[in-house]
Length: 181
Image (cartoon, rainbow, N blue to C red; front, side, top):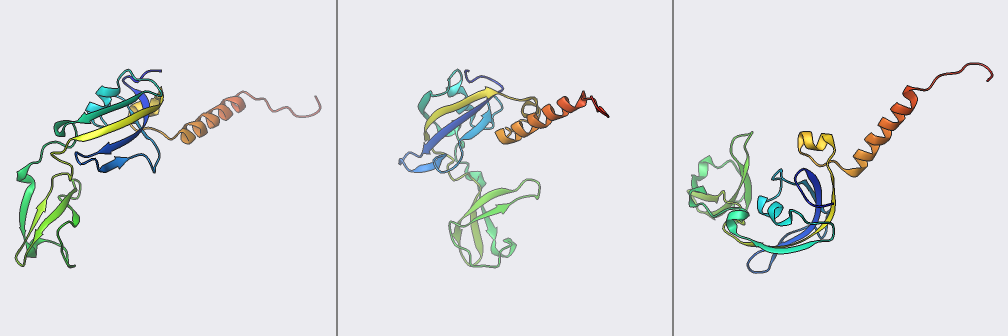
């Protein structure tokens, strides 16, 4: 089966920055599964694996615009210290969540002084190119529920649902017989 729109695709991958430092990987976790064409991974990755089959390997570079985007200097803000809601010791490099309760985004503290705190709301990899090395480990048809909600189901959940449906179907037409046969 080939990778194409609305198929569930599972990949193992490694992403390195321009300095060849590992920034993300499936090495110590489960492979990544997604529905092709739904942009739950970078669209540039979907484009580069379109038509691949299980076992195909791809190595490529995602330019910053294809990954986390360019750095945006407007996302660097200086906040008066008395408006920063944190009582502990602040240090550069600390990460916090900021914004409206329904739209929280991570911000990184980049500078601290007595009166103000400078934060950066850019993704830490914004402006960076990423080297990607991936292998397609599975391609399958998406089930209706996955296509409806865009979320890949765990195979154990699918098997459990299928077994329950089979059980319902097999007992739905059974007839209870009383007495000797």
